Image (cartoon, rainbow, N blue to C red; front, side):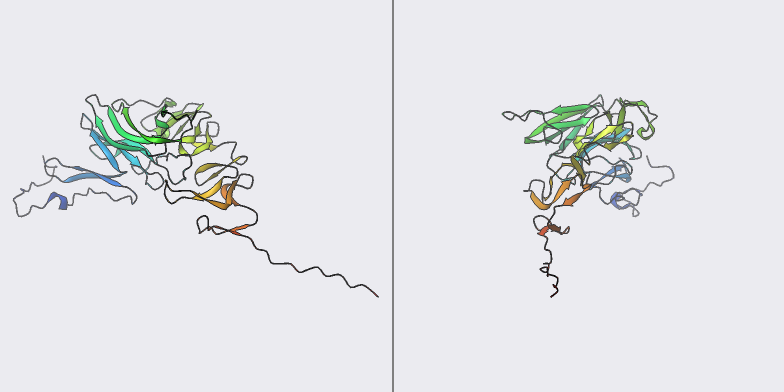
Amino acid sequence: DCPEGSTFVSRISDQAVPASQADSGAHCGFYSKSDACLIKYHKYTGLPIWGADVPAVAGLVPSSDGESVHISGRYAAGRADSFDDNVFLPGYARIGGLGSQVSGLFNAKLSAETGKGEYVLHSGGGNWDRISDSVGDSEGNIYNIGFSGNLVMNWGGRLKTTMREDDVDKGDVDPGTPAIERHMFISKLAAHTEIVHSCLTQCDGNTDTATISDNSCFIDGQCYMEGDTGAFYGKSCWTCDPSKDQKNWVEGSTIGSTQCYIDNLCLNNADAFYYQRRSWSEKIYSECQICDPLRNTNEWSLKTGYDVDTNSNPPEDCTESTSAPTSAPTSAPTSA
């Protein structure tokens, strides 16, 4: 079963080397921020056939027909490279978190022959999203097993779920609302059935060139109706506006009037900049840097009477302004 043009070398031959030392041209490391390397080895020789840079993998399920492999895990959108060299997954944000503290869960299908990605799906809620393992069944379905710390979860497509905790009444909760407890989940993907997204009227194998229905948006691989917001991704002040852009979120009417969009988060008027060493650490708020949408919608505004050191974290970032004293006025000389 050797590749055409190759010569078989017995393992007891003086020319034999360990498969791990053979230069087959298959390796990872093309992307500096990838957390894992997925490698396919030849079933007889043990030689690497291809390598793929991927996010940290928690589960791996070969397809029943042997033509593909499904992987799953967690990605950190704030520091990750693109998936398969051209797909950037959106980060799910938690309410009260920083714009850099975004992540999500992924399910991806790769070609078993080449290692190239065929599609990738994202899901999450913004707080403690984890997949522990994935398994498959004889019909080609994929089951993810994991846990999360969210009350609202986006599973992809139009499927969303809301968790109600015992003895806790938070009323209507928004995406990104943290739960008090961790909750186990099992999600099922009909991986053997690939359909065209509901908002795409025509798709010839690649969603980048698909035709989107007039009253919809297709953003980051999911369909949204006109007026939907990007709340799951810290963009509650951004909307789906097909008249302006069907493939990207559009700034909502509140930005510049009652809200700012700073550091990848929607903020209300007078919200203060804060420092947090870890996502679970105490927040230390700035005394002088605030959201003032009438002054600047995309940068922190400085309160009157303060100077700011942008290289320091709160509370060392602010100092009260000091003005040089003015001389007392002198009276004009009077004539005798």
